[in-house]
Length: 191
Image (cartoon, rainbow, N blue to C red; front, side, top):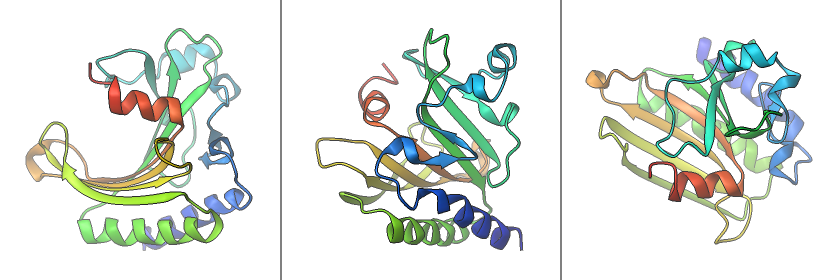
């Protein structure tokens, strides 16, 4: 029952995307790329929500937005901001829904994908599976590219299928990654 409610809530949350022609038009839990976190919380609250998990390269800082946003559709929400940006402008968003088995995740991801494809025309869609960077699970990735190659700007729907002994919870992640941030993830984040 919880999964059905989550599916319906996600679909209704995507309705604002019906006329999207720019990645900044996408919302996750009311947040969009280009918004200031200061519109949602005080600077003190934002600073207290810095994630303990950061990239090796600290060009971007990850904030746990679920510490100051009441979540309706997701179990987790993170927002990134460029380091030393005193305006706290959102550069990337990632929401996650926890799941128990991979089939459940693949089904939900497929439903979300189908709905998004009905209202948005993507330049390319790529589906792959690979071992997680830390070797503690398998990522079943779906990248929906908004611009032609070599752009890597995308909406990403991943079933992060972590092994039972990994210490991580399995989740379906929905990420909004503009060009600059996607380039950072691919080429700089872990250097």
